[in-house]
Image (cartoon, rainbow, N blue to C red; front, side):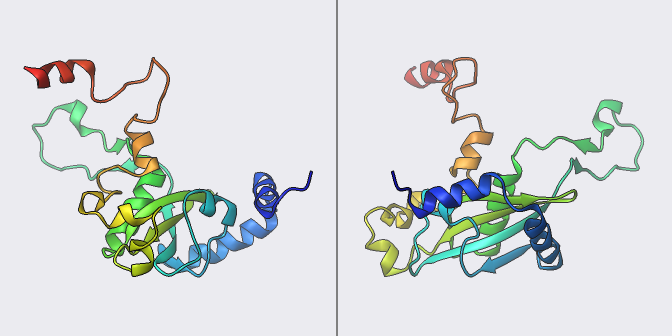
Length: 191
């Protein structure tokens, strides 16, 4: 059986060439935190997540610092000692944070999806697929015209992307995981 291009691209990304990726990350570190790229690095992943090579699609590379989030420690006395911790664990995934930062930088574009492209000792790198929902090519596309509806605005900030839903615990099919809204909340709505 003959496999297509996407199959071989997927296989190549399972074991990427470490030297090439390291050299790329050196260049990415010198760039800005959010950079518009000409085409996606992982074409197979981008296509699986909805990317099309047509007008209205923009791919951004986002760089994030790794590690826990550090809060500023206040200098005033008279606080509870348990509130004085300055290192907090982040409840949002780094991918979701990358989508939010991309959405805030490009306010006229909508986040479709994102995927990781690498990490080193200090940074995570993601590619975020953005869509300009005002373009006629997007409005006339039957698979993408839902993005131009008003209820689908600011998806990343509201946690409606795939990474946002996963961080909020909405993508689990396991009975042990939290399902939202809870059954109790549904009971309260009925009263």
